[in-house]
Image 1: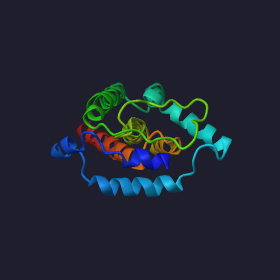
Image 2: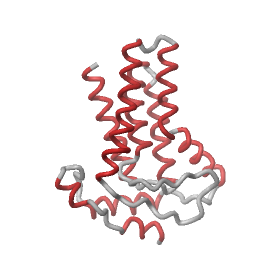
Image 3: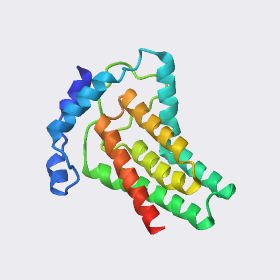
Image 4: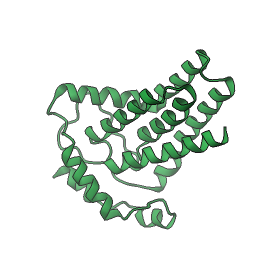
Length: 195
């Protein structure tokens, strides 16, 4: 029921977001999707190993450090030119600022309420839940760095795994993660188009 309490709460700025065209689906439909998916994703506390994997994946995605590291490795191994590496770093930094300092401040969606105590090591952010910053950064990096280096298959799998971890740990709703992936993918394609 605790998860439902968070899902049933109304976004404080949903009307403003709709006026801006930032919420392309009706809120009740999103809540139904969230309830259905979260009901099928196992809760924390059922398997210590699954929880540890989820916590590790979530930490890997923190502040996009893994994605910056992969861009640097791409440059050092000559898979990215100097120009491409700079474009990747600028795009990833811009995405972080845009998502976490602009979009999330416009859409004040409460985070899910965990059904159980958080596994050790889980950081429960207080920022808006929508969209998932971990997911948008992952999708951008998998699209941009992954395409330019040829590493997109493992990077895409890592992006998907990080998104799953955010749902499993009840830090994000599924629609937060999906929106983050779409946002990051679109930004990545846009950058690739102009590069």
